[in-house]
Picture 1 (cartoon, protein in one colour):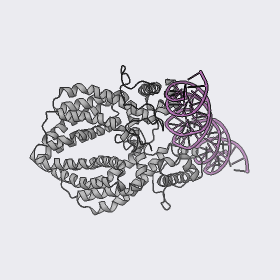
Picture 2 (cartoon, each protein chain N blue to C red; picture 1 turned 180 degrees about the vertical axis):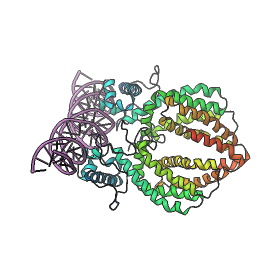
Picture 3 (spheres, protein in one colour; picture 1 turned 90 degrees about the horizontal axis):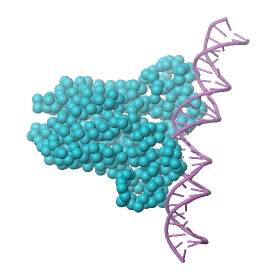
Picture 4 (tube, rainbow over the protein chains, first blue to last red; picture 1 turned 120 degrees about the horizontal axis):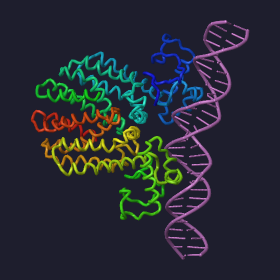
Length: 249
Length: 249
DNA sequence: TCGTCAAGTTGAACGCGTTCAAAAAATGCG
DNA sequence: CGCATTTTTTGAACGCGTTCAACTTGACGA
């Protein structure tokens, strides 16, 4: 792990394909001129995503991706430094899907609990078909220094998308709470989501029913706690807890 | 992942080496008669542990283990179904070391916070030299269905050792708390430890100073919360939180 | 148009974890 | 002991992710 590029998962050795920002693969026409390299790149991403979704992580070998896209393995590695980088693309795709699904919920506004429940449930809906894939993914993401780690620089875009959802949720909620808590709540929810994901991934109950039930009980509980933060009795506990949270950074 | 053995990490296909319970590699004489197979098995474990500690996870290839032990790769696979199974042995070794280090702390008894701090700190001391290895390990352990997953049946022994430490800690502590909380506290601490480990593994500050600081602030905070559980105002929050915790199982 | 250089592409090769048919060694029985 | 059976050991082979020297294609100024 000794590459120092920022924010993108490709490498391109010393010579990189045309730089650009990640955008929808199916966008109509604008954006950077789709040169030959760009075309190949998109083909690889699209093929990889399709195969990951169809056949899962392990069956989707680099050779399978390359041959399905009609090119050589080496060529795929010219655009992506590793299989993990392609996994990251798949992850981003699902995250954009989640982002879109969550849009109406956040736009409507409303109580904290209702919104959080919506965000978590729609996340499970988007990821549901890929539960097994997620199990392998989490194994990659848990390794420090991996590009797909939620703490890696390569995951900055992912992190931003995710944090943004919670930021908007908190900004838009009418639920009253300690202002100090409100300031930290987006990040706290992001961490909570990490925990939920870990639980969900290990949840082998049919349709991940256990996870559903837990967030349905847990979210109102959390909403209750958030409300309590305004009470004088809970003030010291809240303040100290937040101080601890800030230490994690 | 289609083997259904209980509690051990080896396989042995249809024919398994002499069954026995995992014991100290360096014990004097008793235990199951050390037949040829048993000797080979121990040699492999000892060699693997040594190489993991000396050269880390990736450099310790199955070929390296086999050749260092003076036998063939296939032979290693006769006793251990995978490299992960050998990693598990290394993990168990460190856990026994931790268990021993923690003994005097638990024997002394004392306040909850003091004991918990001792347990966590000594864990970091034992694992400190293997911080990088732990990073790879957590990647394996995070994958559902992996034998080294903390939730796997193969990890039952590990889990028991760990839970036992927290059970004794809670049983031995003089700190007053809600009895309902006391009943669930060992498992809660076990989960907390999982979180600490994840943070520690990703903590790249020198000597993992950040993790040290956080547990030094976090443990007293937790002790405070535990104490608060006896107050009437905190009762509903405690009770509901515990109900939620029980749902996780 | 041609030549030059960068961009893009190839496929063989490497080391890895893992498998397995076959050989060797140990064991048990008449 | 002689022989059949089981346990243990071997090493070649497989498919995987990844690397890289060599080749082809495209872009562009002279």
